Amino acid sequence: MGKPQNGKHSAAGGAKGGSSGAGSKGKGKGKGKIGTKFSTTKPQPKPKVVKDNNKANGAKPTDKRAEYKKPEHKKTSENKRPTQEDAEADEGPLGSRGQQQKKQRTERQLTEPTGELKIAARKLWEQLRRGDLEADDRKKKMVEMMDLVRGQIKDITFKHDMSRIVQTCLKYGSDAQRDEIAAELEDAYTELSRSLYGRHILMRILKYSSRFRSAVIRAFYGNVRKLVKHKDAAAVLEECYAVYANAGQRWQLVAEFYGNEFAVFKDTDDVRSVDDILAKAPQKKDTVVNALKTAVVPLLQKGTVQHSIVHRALLDYLRFADAAGRQEMIETMRELVVEVLHTREGAHAAMLCLLHGTAKDRKLIAKSLKPYLQRIACEEHGHAVLIGMLDCMDDTVYLGKSLLPDLCALAPELLADQYGRRVLLYVLAGRNSHYVGLDAMHVLRDGDAVRAETSKKDPTTRRRELTAYVSAPLLRWLTNNAELAIFDPMPSQAVSETLMRAQGDKQMAWDSVLDLVGRGIEENGSKHVLLNAISNR
Image (cartoon, rainbow, N blue to C red):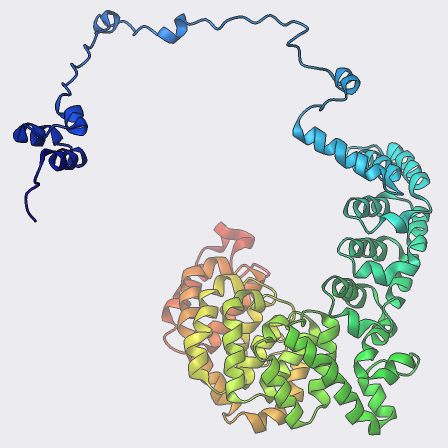
């Protein structure tokens, strides 16, 4: 790059670079307005710093803000804030923005047919729902509320705020008042179940109104397959089926999964299950199985498998389908097993998937259970699935490297749990009726014939290999926790089984137990190992 030809360019360049004065002075003749402006500017003198004598003498510095006095403003009628009466008289805006919005909302609600009713009911509800309200006062408020909403409950119950009011009435009302509300809503049960807010009213009717409980359950007859796909209705359906329905009502709810014939013609006296159907009409097996597949597969594909009524249909399909159909269903649901094992039928269906599945299916199922081991092991029905997996899976190397280390790491929590202890004790003691539940034992024994075909490893060899993986961690646990475990009802069972059946060097574990036995009986009294009711077992 060449040098600038005149002072103007130099001055301009200096303006950008911050040193324009030197460039303009060097050229002499090229002073323009820009060059003159920057080249003739003189540096400003620095302001003098005045020292505070009070601070120098050790006193506190003078606070000049304290010397300032805020001017007094006398309240007059001109600057006084308007009151509510003044605002109403002037027809101007009242209060804050929230108050204005509340007023607008109230005016908008008054234009609705039930607007005045809703406003009055909300004011009364604020008093009725208080926890510190006396019983006599609550009865009086309930009478006022029922007089207010009687005959119009169906019109107001689908709104969020009014739904809460009806729920409160069902909670605090008398039996007669609850039945009155349930009767007024009786022809809208199905519609309420599909409502985001109305479904909570049905839950309250099921809980508090025993007289109309059967009417709510009957409202689902003929609509189960459609409503089970609906998010809100499925929750009410599950409550009906799993909590409040008796055996006959449960069959009438689930019968739709077996075909239209059983949905329309329900013989509740003789038929309560698919076993009864096939016992009376064996020729209908293919029809029933196809209907189950048609109903269940869309639910699996949609992921709607968390309800126990679906688990029952899924279990019946796995029990009665042929080998090809069963394998197809297992491949569809092998990654969904973790979502069905929390119920009795779902856990049974999961065990059948493990029993009939291939080695690949079993490994994928085991992999899906790994993140939730502690929760599954401590569930009433879920722990049986882990036992079923340990009972039929041939790949003990995968189990020993993937699942068993995690289970052993959770030994203090699992061995103290009613159901969690059964998983580790099964590895040590096998199918011992003291540790394996009755339902799980029946499933395991009924599947022995299938296991002989689908599993190649001998059961004794399988359990010996699994025991080898858990022995060292359990012996360490016993050595470090003998004094605490031996006096606890649940872990004390693991103490005896570990000492008898674990593999490897047990000397340190025995020493920790014998050290407790060697303590003086007179000093410890009933707390001694030999005298304690739990430890002397």
